[in-house]
Image (cartoon, rainbow, N blue to C red; front, side, top):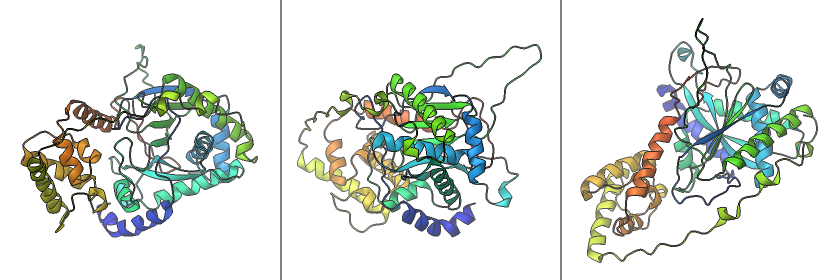
Length: 396
């Protein structure tokens, strides 16, 4: 895979850049609270069963259109996003298995990639939208050599520490039947396990007989997510029942107002925090350390104090090197998230001299680590390669 990626990365990156040009890089769902200035990763979940017959109807539609169940679900989710946001063009993340090389077929290992999928809810019948989503999935799996962090840089996506870059919502269609432990003479039952975190604002896991929403409770109330799950499964039922009707004409009352409308508190403006004035000489010395580190890591001759790190060739891996070097040279603990929040030499130096307490940022950084670890579930992981070419794990 590494050899293939080296050969294909430039080609695939060019394809993705062209394909995603003009696509919005944010999906801002109606929420119940203001978005924190720095992304948090708390997680909560809600499970919702499908109405009777929906799973079978979705499978029938997938076969009739020559696509997969994932294509059907993504098309329905794109229609839901159109109704929630008023826009018809969205990027969401999904999960695919990169086992295209023959040498990987019999290898036990983690070959899962997260890719962006462009959902365009055109004014067309639902069958056409399903075919469009299916084509998107096929195109994404055909260009596996450009990792998402390279796409962020190539597309010039602004770095916003309050949200994940490029995609904030993921749809993961699990294409396996969840096994049951059946030991003779030994009763067994599933026990709930606390969610380790939510790396996205919202993740929709599509199971065999329903969906599970993993969401950030710092953004959404449980009541909103319960209503959202009910309305999405009801909308999916309406769409697969009459797939040749215009999608917009199916169940136009969904989602309900409680799901479509943001809470007034979600728009509350944040109060500006006064910043103490730093000693000019000390501030200049700190700026010099940061600028010298940037030049060394990025291989640049000059760096302006107002240059944005990500605009002059920086990326997340380079920022990790900057973080390690700056913390060593300044002899202090600096939360990694501060480098994302203050991406210029001048802004970071001013922040470091403002005397901000590092506690909350360090806690959020710990949440980030926990959420990333939580992407690999600790309970009943299962991998499968189904008709979509997807290989997935169900997080707990």
